[in-house]
Image 1: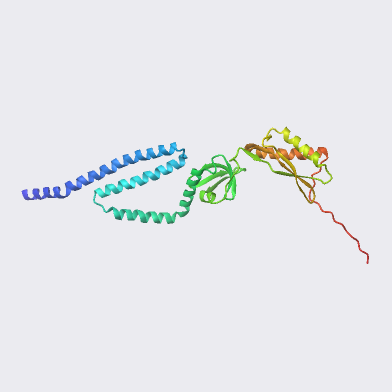
Image 2 (image 1 turned 180 degrees about the vertical axis):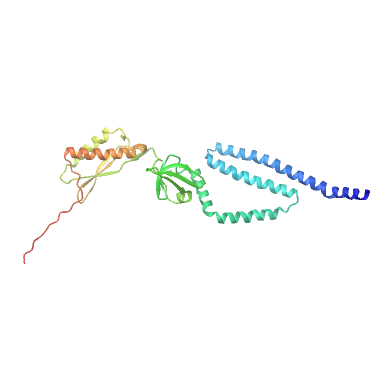
Length: 274
């Protein structure tokens, strides 16, 4: 019996105690490492908040930092247990490569989403045209952007398609120019037509006096004398002011006898005799 007890004591001294110490140390490394990781993630988020980085991007980058720190802590704990971490790192690398190949489209959308959030070619509430669609931006996500069209449809566009093409932001500037071409007949008085348009513009408070509106003869067309009408408005008033201006010009020209001709051709018929 004493021999067996001594053997048990030797086994405990050789295996149990060292392994027990390693396990306790590994657990301590993991617990303390996770606590430190949380503090580091909070600090990183505070730094990004001071740099005015978007909240969506802050949260996403914070989760990435936390995942990286967690992997480091796990590897440190495994090393304490005597596990060959080189093979573990090789497994992580192979898994990362496989995931990257499988989700390459998602990764490109993610990269484009970060570029959109960082460089801000548009923001929430802007009316934009991108990736072949146009609408008001309602959400800017990491992988896609949600827009609402004028007829109240919701369109979700992958960020890679948006950032790889041309982005037209109609809300980026405070003012926009209305570009109209009004045709009058060749028999009508150009000076009177221009004066009528000037009076119409001056009476509409939505049409700005600075920059000064442009009213000029643009071209001598096949069926009309084309007058360019280019007043400036606030971006939010663009469509209503444009529609109102067109209607008022038409009604005023009708009342003053100024014609707005439509395309027409004169056909001359010659009768030949045998």
